[in-house]
Image (cartoon, rainbow, N blue to C red; front, side):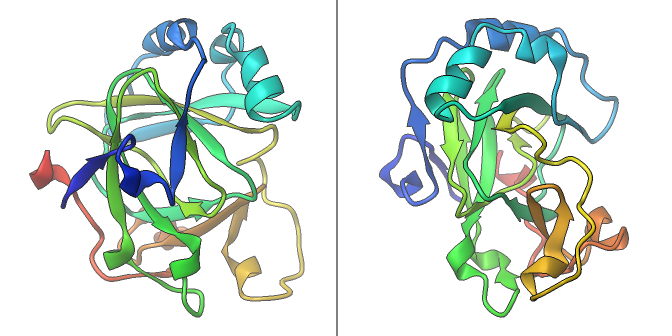
Length: 211
């Protein structure tokens, strides 16, 4: 699979890199959190990361004054497994280089997305990468075959919290997986086994051979 850079013009439909932020303190805080022994971990809000100086500017500047949370996804991963989206942009800040697998919400047809539409982009550590609300994404991938990743995840506060109790009104409601989180799972994924909508068709992409 071709892996482009987030600085390449081909990333423009999916997001952009935000300039002017000092991420050094956040990156240092991320490095203090041990990697899981296997797989990946995710926490929506981590006090040590939210104590970094960048927390204020991200809330006031990047999110225009909205209340935010800074969590992290970290571990080892090379597979697609799922794609998710929110009603707002997500910011990703890596402790080191990492790879995003993304697709466009407009390519969902009758509630299903063909994984052939998925693209891969590499982001450098320390960069603030905005992933648009219309961009499908999920857990980052490591940038080296035997490596790992730590990626800070910035979102409006409450995102990825408990799923609200709703009466489904349409097909999209069936993919609501958590607060402000709509999830399309590959049938082979653990999330599908847990009841997530199996709405990805095609190969469950694994970029291990491309690293």
